[in-house]
Image 1 (spheres, rainbow, N blue to C red):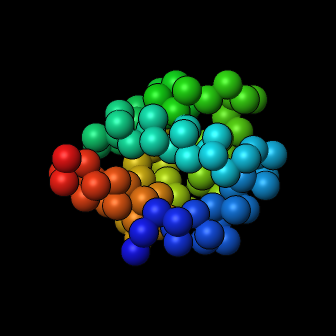
Image 2: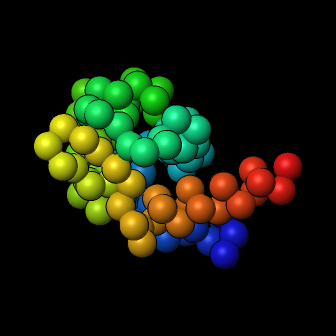
Image 3: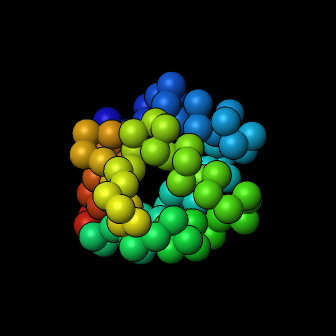
Length: 99
């Protein structure tokens, strides 16, 4: 599965629409998150900071939770398994490992 097919998924398009954001901008935010994700984020603020989010506080996290891309356990946020975001991060990991 390539990046372009991931970017045509309805959940990706819905998040972009809900945040009134072009796909290219959302992809950039997700890439910054990927680079700092490791084992998750300890707060909404840390996730939005990692994503270099400049929109309304909490809006990005709310949109990602609504599409089940991230899971929240208390204040801790992690990428949901078998979600668009986990597939995208797996794809980027594979691409990065190829150099």
